[in-house]
Amino acid sequence: MKKILIFIIFVLFTVGCSNISTQNFNVTEEDRNSLLTMVTAIKEEFKNGEFETFEKALAPSIKNSIVKKNIESIDFSEVSILTSKPVFNKNAAKNMVAFVYGSNTLYLDVEYLLKNGEWKIVNFKERRG
Image 1 (spheres, rainbow, N blue to C red):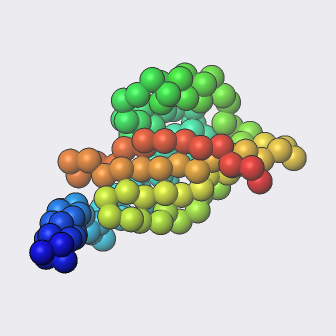
Image 2 (image 1 turned 45 degrees about the vertical axis):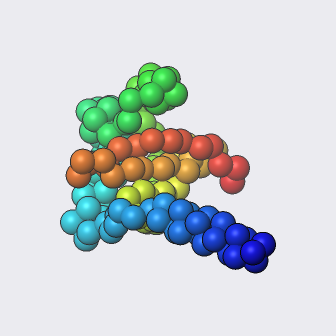
Image 3 (image 1 turned 135 degrees about the horizontal axis):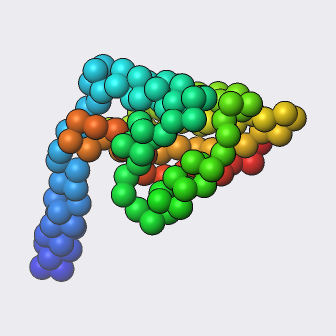
């Protein structure tokens, strides 16, 4: 009787936990290209002192609002912006961005999330180079 009860409990746990992620989030080639296009547009706008695409791409949060204000105060005309190719995972993506100014380099890990067909920047993490 104990073995049967333990077996039933084990089956219930495995069945309950095996169905956690039933949605299929496969990023299409079109979605991948739209992220690459967005990143390129943001780089070009930063060089020209514009931030329209960047503002649209930011997910609404207090942290992102603070980052936006700080970034808007920087003159990117003398800064080289380098980006890595994004790594995709379900409906999310990550890449590394390097801001090179003079002999200094600032590395950021940027996280994106695909929501309603649009890529949103959800997080920035400073990275030690």
